[in-house]
Length: 243
Image 1: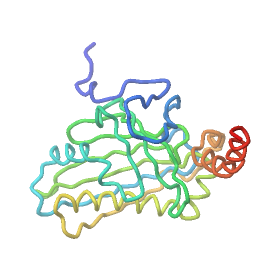
Image 2: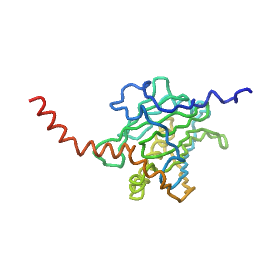
Image 3: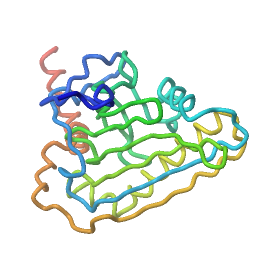
Image 4: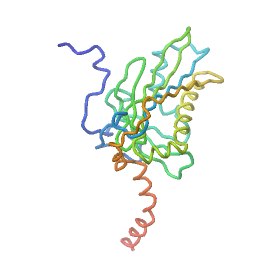
């Protein structure tokens, strides 16, 4: 049996992730974790699509994706960090990231993604255990009426009940704003003076998967909160040891 033509564009199955190919990240909270897509998430299932037309930009979809891959971290909103793998955005590579779980949070949450697919016109990330979302997100490019269009489309559930609650209280809108800003930054960098990002949101499944409520034990947000609260105690203990 011959392999599918796009077989080389997919990541090989792995039991545990490794971020050994990433340099510069202050924390690696992904190595040793499993991936966790929408099937393993807790909250309602949403499909979110963000699109921006690159009017006046002479760039093919393939050229856009090459640029997006090469400079992916630079298009993120300020105060969010994406540590790309040394091998670039390629199937099977793991990237690390630091983001604030909600706007104004005093500390950042450390997590990452696995590149599950990549070709000349798209690439797809999948989240690991502990991420705020259990998701796939695909970045793609196409042409419509002679204009190249950039798109980010996520299929996502919140990973656990605590994150679901935060989404009901406003984190969902903050997540939408993050990707709208990313698309706007991409378009602006390519010469679009006033980019217009179109957003479409569809609740695919209103049910919550209570069988996955236990995902909270992996939550990077919970671990971050515990670490923040117990930091003074650890500082006192270190002072006692060194004194």
